[in-house]
Picture 1 (cartoon, helix red, strand yellow):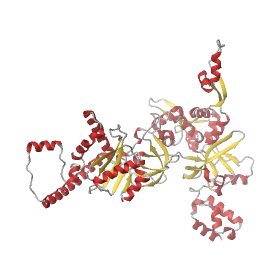
Picture 2: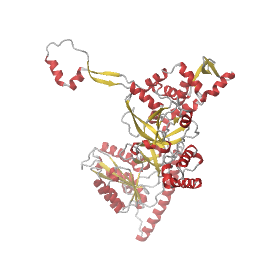
Picture 3: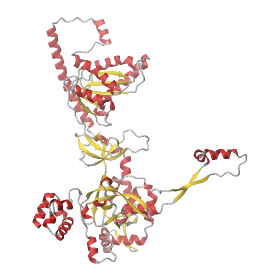
Picture 4: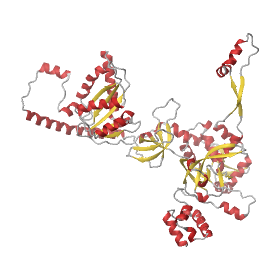
Length: 637
């Protein structure tokens, strides 16, 4: 297969019929041709280039449709640099010290020790095969730019179509552009009024200048500082916008992130539950210190209507222990209609799932790494603090202090409802030690009432408490949403959009803050999305929008530049004809259309070839739907 070198292309181009299906990476790239005003989406495939000159180079190429195959592989600047790097890799000999030699071959070290008076001992022993040295990207980029001579730069300026208007302005003499020594410059005035000259960069070297002023030794600074660094010495038309896009689409910068990357979405209000024990939130906490009974974990369940809590100590968080503890909780509160939990293996195992299905309980799972959606997480912080204080005060283990802690939490007024959980569940508050002391001193008289009167009073009181609790919860919820949404930004992702996922636990301070990119597969709600992450065990996962940010993919240019050489004019004109690739290669297949519509029976081979060339060259004037193509072939017949 012939390889066509294009100095104006930043991504390789290959035909679909030369790529196997398993070589497609699942990624896409946006390309732009010279005479096309729109960016087009093409799939990427893994390509292996082999040659006796440089060996084997593995790269990625954009795949165009099969009918656009002209018999060559379009080689871009990036792959050409990989080939040059493979040719000129310098080698360094590996240096092995004495301690390393002993680790590799202890017998040699023992033989040395047997010598009483060894001769002059070397500082280092040079052994092993030559190891290739890969130079840093910044050094390689500097070498490539240094190889550009003044004459090459002048020729590139004259040949760049985007600088022709600048040359015209320089010839008129009424602009900031000027030509000195056949090189185009632009005048720049600094804050002190000093005049300096900026080199006007042609199209072919702009990506290298952008990389030099932002990557490598430039240390990936932000947009403003990258602009300041570049504009001190260089300029080209529309360079400000290109700098902003280059920095915004820098992959290392996006992965490391900044302080303002974590943008929170507006708070989503959840429905208010009015029926007691109809919905419960459950979670586990631990490992705690092992109690006297051998328990190290707590299984917590909270009623979302009354905020009534219950905790069961368990030895482990296996699915058997969790289901046994849930049965104990349900024996006190009854079986709920809905349960919310996280994605822990204790709640997603087959046994636990079957347990919920048997009792008709609907299960809702929280988003990954978003504990704010489950109120039990906040409750755990409170109960752990109370248990630690009681253990410090009494010296007993935490399991013996658990009943007193639960009694205190059940009888205290909750800030959301305005009532204690016991009042909303039992219709009255429980008798606590302070109530017993009060009754001992005050000795209130007991009211004599019939069972019917007591029941009616209890029902009316519970109904009144429930109405007041719903009103209080609504007011508290609205206040919290108003406070939370002050700095919130409403965002939305589309299906197929690339996103980065926040890393919630980093191994060290130098680790990346964002991972990915992943692809949005579907939208579950205003705040939850299903994201596909390649290379993970569970490829699809539910993420909250606060853990996502858009991934800006760098656009690639495809400028088809062909040097005809000694070819005849007819062949040269044929090669220079640019065939526009379709946005989706799977939507239009000429061979399939020809077979389905029986074009070979209706048209001659010359007419079929003319139709193929017509559709390829002027595809934007035709609808790429199969029925329309069949209708078109019928008209031509």
